[in-house]
Length: 286
Image 1 (cartoon, helix red, strand yellow):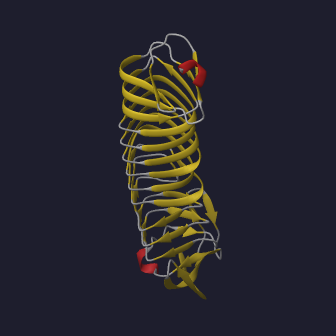
Image 2: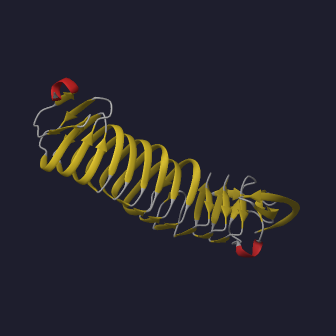
Image 3: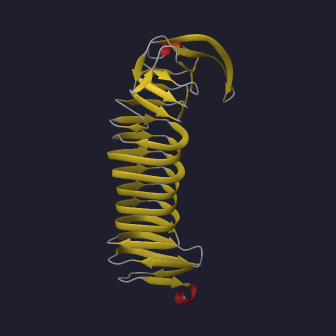
């Protein structure tokens, strides 16, 4: 459905030099609701033998040292030394040294998905598929709409993280301005979250930094929190340290329970158990 043209160029990518050729549709066909007419110019590739005849990409896309199996449309993307086995749509995505296997993916995906050693750069990562993500790094906003998903050895940085459904995260570094999720379990993670809103969650052996946390029905074990404003509702805390670096911490904590729950304020320890809002400041603690 497509072929190589006579348009060539040389690219230097991550210290490697690639000779690539532009592709062109040699008949009209459809890829993921994208109408490709005969004569449409596509992106640049190095080896046509590893690419599906039912795939296509726009002129801004580069694909080198990679394999694609399935009906996939790529736009404004780069694929380097990767194996893609899926149907779907990839937009503003860079995949380097990764394996992506799925029935369908769109970074808007809709079905079962497994991402291994995936690195993406772009404005947003959108996922609507159950599955697993391992050893991946995402730079941009994250929107996960799924029933159940497991994530391990991850790196995230962006302005917004939103997740629905059941989310399991472990051994990951998370950095985002706004985090909203439901039914979340986080183990052995480091998190820099400006604003965290969590409804039903479990944190185990985590270190969290942020400005405002609103936690409902949360369970915390062996955690450190450095924050300015904390709202806890129906929470259980076990061996948790809360530190306020700016000298004032607003805590609203009705119905909390647990052991070794302490507040650290300029090296002052305060055991805390409250059924009403408290304003903790230096004068109050002294």
